[in-house]
Length: 187
Image (cartoon, rainbow, N blue to C red; front, side, top):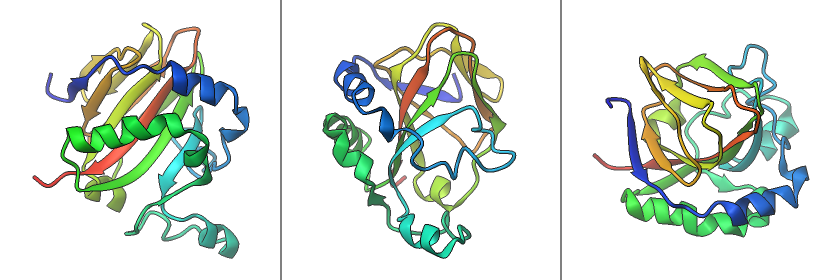
């Protein structure tokens, strides 16, 4: 495969799934990514854990500049899910990351999808290693980058280049949940 690299397997996702199930109010506190008109992520629910500090942008009512260069901060949702700490920091060590960027959990419902798109902004290029930790999935959920497709199993960790056209389609009858961790690695 040219576009996907499986870098790990066997993550125990049960503690994280239980913690999320016990706190359903964590979903969609931040909808700037999913509610924007024309967003490829319109079917998705998110739990934002780390990114640019959103408070000053919300206070001003002006989101321009939100995706420009910044130092990422932890969101309150991170502190509600301590089960993620060994996973996230373990990934930093595993890929020899030098800086941690955005971290979020996404959920694609049964029958939902992330439409084909290319990510192209400062964050994507600065944090050049995007990792998926599959928390929950099903055999009918697939990821595509360019002309390659892969089915990711729960507990797997995958790297892919999100500056290429990609999409996710959940044709199954259960939600697909993925922890996304963006890390800067020096080449």
